[in-house]
Length: 212
Image (cartoon, rainbow, N blue to C red; front, side):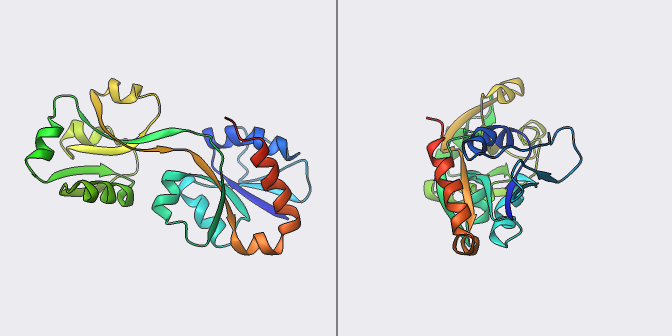
């Protein structure tokens, strides 16, 4: 049995064409089912639905043989014990620093003042500001990041941005681009050896179907 870990939403939807290229179809809609393990048209392949942040952990410890996870999640996880053969070029967005539109971020940075930054990407944020020589106090949040500057909890946020419409709606602006983000295929290293004859054709099929 091959177990593929996916998260609901955009990654799930954009992974479906890649699965189709490997001759795999998920037989149930995760939005309409309460099941966390979904069957496919192949008796030897199943999909498990987990939180996006948990995908690398499931794959690392063998709860899944392979999975699809965003670069942001993998950077926070550290990627230990994972083989990352493919950038699937799906679920693309960017990671940025954003502040209230009336906050002079450049002046604060130039003056060397210590700023408070809210994010769930503490590893990436810490490295980014360290590289710039900016002193920050990091505040770990898990959602509604835009609220932090609006309530005075933080001066800035580090978060994923897709269209930027949510920032604009909340009177925030991007002030720094940190990196481009897309989703990657991750494979359990032991599974790649033990189930190579099954996994390798799947990986090759994914590779052939990656969107430009």
